[in-house]
Length: 248
Image (cartoon, rainbow, N blue to C red; front, side, top):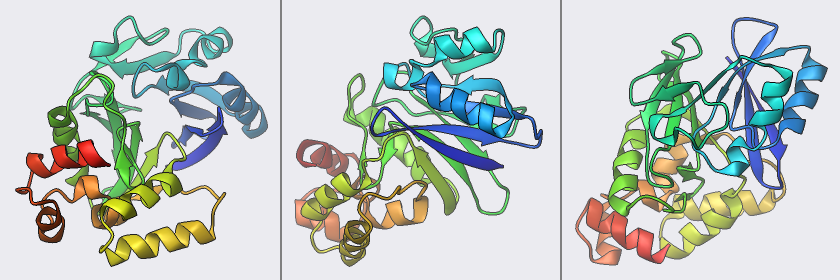
C-alpha cells in the first residue's frame, strides 16, 4: 500500500491511499477538494472511496465537490456522525473494515464523540494508522466533545498497535507540540533529542510519525512511566492522563 500526503488548508493533510488497483485511490479526510482533484489528474487515478475520521469541516469540506465529480462513491465515517458528514453512505463502528477488508476501524472518541481511525495492518509488525485529530506528534487532539476518560481509552488502543505502526495524523503540528511536551517532560532525553532534530529541520513535513517514537516521547502515551508519574505526583493511568490534559 502506498500513501500520498497532500498538504491542504495551511496545516492539514489529506491522504491518498493507493492499493492493488493501479487506477484507483481512496481519500482520507478531504477537507479541500482541489488538492485531491489535482493529484488525481496528475496520477491518472480515479477516486474510489472517501474515509472521514470525523465531521469537522477541515476534514470533510471537500466531499460535496468530490461527489459531484465522482457520484455514487462510498463515503465512510463513524456511525455517530450520521447527518454530520456530507454524503455519508457507511456508518462505521469498532471492528468494521474498509478498503475491501484491508483496513480496520477503531472507535477513538475524545476529540469528537464519534471519531474513528483506520488501521491497515501490514502483517509484519507494523502498518498504517490514519488517526485524524486523535494523536499528533507529542500530544493529542483537543477534547471538543469528549472527556479525558474517552481520550484515555482511545490512546490505550493506539498504544497497543504494533511497534512498527506509522501514524498519519491530519495536521502538521509536530514541532509546536513537541516543544510543549519538552516543557512538560524536561528530563526525557529522547524527547529533547527529538526536539533538536525537529528544530534543525523546521519547515519540512514530519508525517508519518512512528508509534515507537510517540511511545518514548509523547507524554500522553507515557501515563504509566515511573519518572513521569513521580514528577507529577500522580498514580499511573487515568490520574496521570487527566493531569496531562490539564497542564499540556
